[in-house]
Image 1 (cartoon, helix red, strand yellow):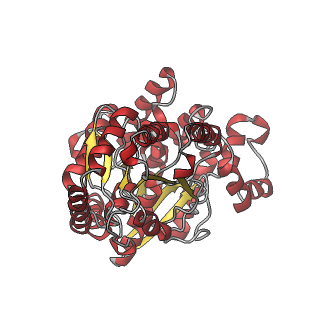
Image 2 (image 1 turned 135 degrees about the horizontal axis):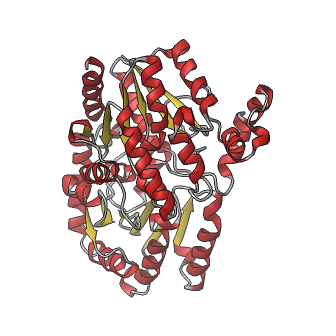
Image 3 (image 1 turned 90 degrees about the vertical axis):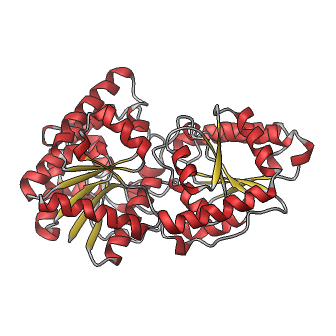
Length: 430
């Protein structure tokens, strides 16, 4: 089967769970004998994916569509100018700039993209379809998220193939808009969902959320958890001398980075935990630098900055080394997440989880047995839960072993990709 997965690139500036999910699918599909391809839009993937950068062109180049959306002067720019703005160096530079992944200012472009052929990116849409017609001729096209639903109608009608759409964290983007845009976008996504043959939510929690928000009928909704390749993660006994708390995600407010920092400061006020370290990785965007610097100043003022380590490398080849030095992982996302791939990577390496009882976190922890939850999601409650868990080495060891076993038995790419293939086969046959 020929499968094309259309994926928004992110330029490699921060940890992207959705991108890891899509690259894992692609690698596993190929391993199972299928002709699978990741087709990046907006920005390069650039995260040491199993799909080489440059394997396909980058469609809907972020700089080009931004200029066309906002300035009439660039609406009919010549091809030579488009090629310049769509070059790797320009797009990588754009990915590092503030606002490259910010909802604010991109509401109209989001709506335009959802409008597909009737939006301002109609030329880019046809270029993508023409490429698929000539070079790929897929049996099924898989959209990485519901914000790409504007592509579905023309892909189905012109290529005569089914379209499948993953659902993961669209609410993070849409709910960051003002109320006027929020309802408009949810209504538009609900409407465009009629052009899709099947939706795949990454958790039970998120399936319920998106059926409600997008009015998706039961017969179109499928649930397949995210998987990883556990063979690339080395299992280690949770660190004890010294103990250390890890954080793996983009360092910004919505992912609870400030909650984590404040909790660590509270933890260090207890003499029993004076040796505990904090290890941080996952990168940031240009928008996040001021916020992160504010947290650093806070750590310095409290005299604990020397106990904190910022780790620049967060590709999968570096993560085993990162987790080997940690005792627990916490990513206290303020409103929870649809899944959180970093949880599987942590469990695969033997590091238990301490997560807020929000989103899909309780679902993953209950299924794996590899961690605990707490509520409410405050620095005080998180610090108290850390103290409780760090004081019980036997429980840490049990959660470490259970978590690794759960990944091997339930969360491998090969097992979960077969479930996705069953969905492909149903929609193709239909």
